[in-house]
Length: 91
Image 1 (tube, helix red, strand yellow):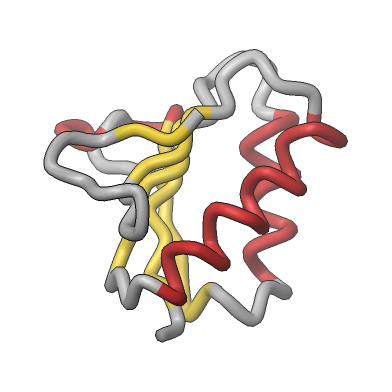
Image 2 (image 1 turned 30 degrees about the vertical axis):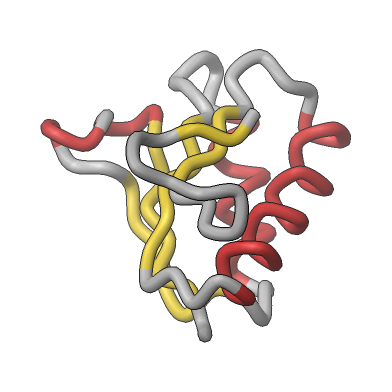
């Protein structure tokens, strides 16, 4: 699910994959980052929730090798903490 206030269809700023299985979430993450890169977004949020941490680890492992990602970090307290990954997008 794409979300975020003030976004247009061409410029997604947030992807919510809470409750997704890893195999379903990773293709969504790739499509989301592709759209964000084409829209020249500087950074985006991926909301994966905390849970067991498996989804966060899988997403961050994917980001480590993704051509769409220049760097990433877990969200800070005001950004959603460990339930969110902030991605700097290669544009």
